[in-house]
Length: 245
Image (cartoon, rainbow, N blue to C red; front, side, top):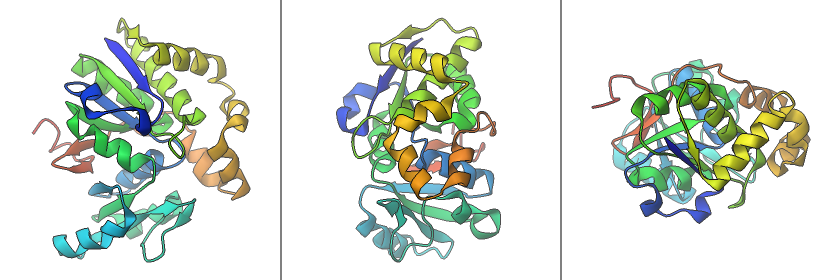
């Protein structure tokens, strides 16, 4: 199995991932938060590249179960129902709901992935489940690090390295791109001291300033979920009845 890494949604085109299994990683906080939301009963997510379009989708779908979620500059968007913190996605609020969601980095990474063979959401929180999925599917895999403002995000690279190590632990023989080789080594160096490494992360330091300790702790918790959200019919879902449909 060949594994490639893209350091940001900015340096990838649809042709790069055609016929490949793709994982989008945005550790702080988009994919970690969305996986948390799915664990709490969220039905599906539609990622949009422009938050101004979110109300139009709500009107078109005409569904009172739909919420709007997302942030700009780490703040909940005015008029949206939820931001990007796990406190906004508790079961009592989002169980059985659908979400139109915006993230400046995660949304375009997900939407580029429409050209992939399959697309999944991953992070530290489900990296073993992601690895199991990729190993079972076989074929070439791509991990898209959503990044921060179009640049490489250290936390996404570390999670990508974690997924590579989990695939290897399942006995798969891997061929790594140069970027994959780097994040693999980086993760193996820092896997027991992630917080120390992340003192060099722009987003991590910003969330520390915002006292988002609960979100950070959740996002850096390894393998607390055993499922992998996936793209189905333009929406991301975790419903096992849709997988393979």
